[in-house]
Amino acid sequence: MILLEGKKLSDKIKENLKQEVLELKAQSVEPCLAVILVGEDSASATYVGSKAKACEQCEIKSLVYKLDVNTTQNELLALINTLNHDDSIDGILVQLPLPIHINKDIILESINFYKDVDGFHPFNVGNLNLNLKGGFLPCTPLGVMKILEHYDIKLQGASVVVIGASNIVGRPMATLLLNANASVSICHIYTKDLKAYTKNADIIIVAAGCPNLLKEDMIKEGVVVIDVGINRVDGRIVGDVDFENVSKKASYITPVPGGVGPMTIAMLLENTIKSAKNRIKK
Ligand code: GUN
Image 1 (tube, rainbow, N blue to C red):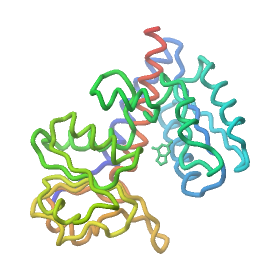
Image 2 (cartoon, rainbow, N blue to C red; image 1 turned 180 degrees about the horizontal axis):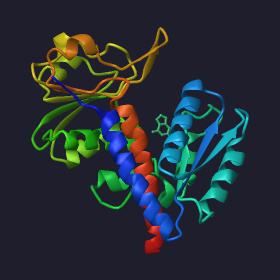
Image 3 (cartoon, rainbow, N blue to C red; image 1 turned 180 degrees about the vertical axis):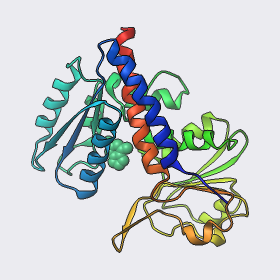
Image 4 (cartoon, rainbow, N blue to C red; image 1 turned 45 degrees about the horizontal axis):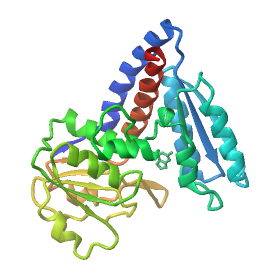
């Protein structure tokens, strides 16, 4: 079994990105990411903190807007509008989930899609679905693709099962895999017989937010397992996979923590720098 060490790969990517930032700064472009956090969800606050810290490591400027949980939708839209028109800002990220009185779809659509480094704007989602290049791709699925590429795991013709159909991970993940010529099944909470899918899969990507969802009796020998889950259980962070037992049968598997999570952040930085480079092209 080979561990897919996302953390190590992300460190290497960040080293390279830092060089690119220095080159941009030499051309008077200072890449800048604006992150908006509404409310006090502790997991979200941790993620936002990690994103800001990673920016600092790569010498990318970050602006973190921490808004009160009672912020209105119009107030949030006004802030996004200001950031949309500020030429010194390359990326805008609104941390999800948002409080229930705010319509996330309206918020995501209000972000200038040229600054949509999360890749959640309908235009960027459309580009991905049409397999058109040039838009922004969502960070977690993109990070998974980079891990698969780095470890030379072939996708063309592979049977891949994606567990989870969220807009943030499952759906864009399945589309990226399809665009890479994999044969993809998307399973979700209403799937009748999950094991019938996972048993035959060459690659399984689990993004369900459910500890121990994927067990040893559900997989074939030699499968590649990517665990996107981040769950807090008894003060420990665990994924969606029964790592101890599944790792005995898998050929490759991501650890949690230290697998997909750090790659998500590295891809956010990569998207921010891609956006900053567009400033030079304009
Ligand atoms: N919440 C969980 N994952 C993400 C992400 O990748 N981006 C944003 N904006 N919010 C999230």
